[in-house]
Length: 527
Image (cartoon, rainbow, N blue to C red; front, side, top):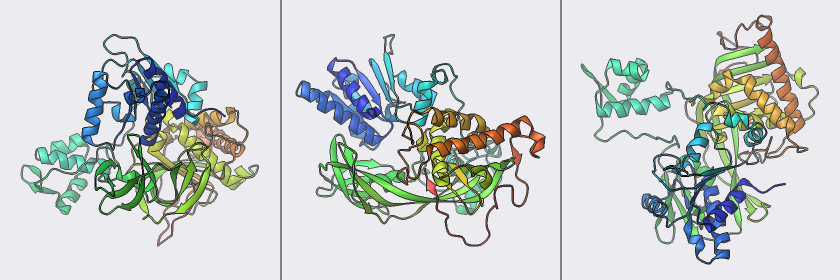
């Protein structure tokens, strides 16, 4: 057992501030940034009363005036330490910083160097400390530092043809200046997409181009958070506390959720998704809250596949349905689960792109716990995907099942967490062998006995990391790799002449394709 990266970051931030060293601590989550700042403040106040006031948290969701005040206080030296999310990674000019703390690898080398470069400007020496989390990717990098320091910045992964991204961009461009045919070529926009916008009344066709039809500017969700933000209101006073992303409201602003803002703790009493409001009251409970959800997935279309005999690898369109069904209260000091409370929140659907792997039952004859093995392999694969794609594990999701209705086989799905896909699953499809090899090596070399956060456990698991079979995961990944390696060495033996094969009409190996008629969602084990 070792201390968490968040707790280590809090102590290092306090040590730096006590010595007058101006420091940024980057933390992956909003809640984590609040925890690091609170921990550092407590430690400093114990040494010198009042010294904790020189540390603060900074994250999205603060009111604009709060963020500007924090930026000014950091620039003038009134604040010496700041625990922040990626909100301070770009776009804000902060000079005079000496140290950057990274509470966990940020997911890409480009993000790591961008954050490290926040300190040491104007020719000053600086220090950057990476604190490895209990995470498969961090574990891999600690044992393979060359992948961090001797590897070029990763290629950017995105899908410019994603209609969920392209449509609002076209509308915004048309609001500036009428779109022409040459503009459509520049955007890579198919004429059918523009015709749909005309039919919907968003654009109007004129002889010299397409015009935006509304008086106001188009709404565009730059962060892809799933809609307008949720306002967090203090119920007793009506005061606006802050805002939160609509996409995370089900998990972080449900009734009974503990919400932290600038070191002050609130408990949510009511969430109104239609009005975009969460009501909260100041409290100081001795616990944190963690939402739990269930997920199902339907295959809509197969784009490409690799037939490796008893193993299949697929890239295609899927629909993911998820629902937050309960939340746990966990004791602050020990993490002990105090109980589980049910929730009644609506289902949410996401049409996106996924990569999935199927295995014949015969390949798993030596695996005792097939669901646990697939689930553990899925967790580890999600944790290692940022090694080959410019994402982090919060950009992607997964599901595994011993028998999926659309594949009729044991299956592991990994999907993009953005509508229409963001290119991560496609990158995984083309980097399959390198991705799975790093995943297997990380799980196999981990020193734990039955699985830990450094290999197969996941902080975002909707099933509470159960079931998990570490040894079974190694076996599953080894089977996948052995057949893919064999195919790569002898491509003509399997009938697949390249690692990317266009899907022919009708069913393909390892999947039955979309099933006609109405079918209920197929539950699986969600990562």
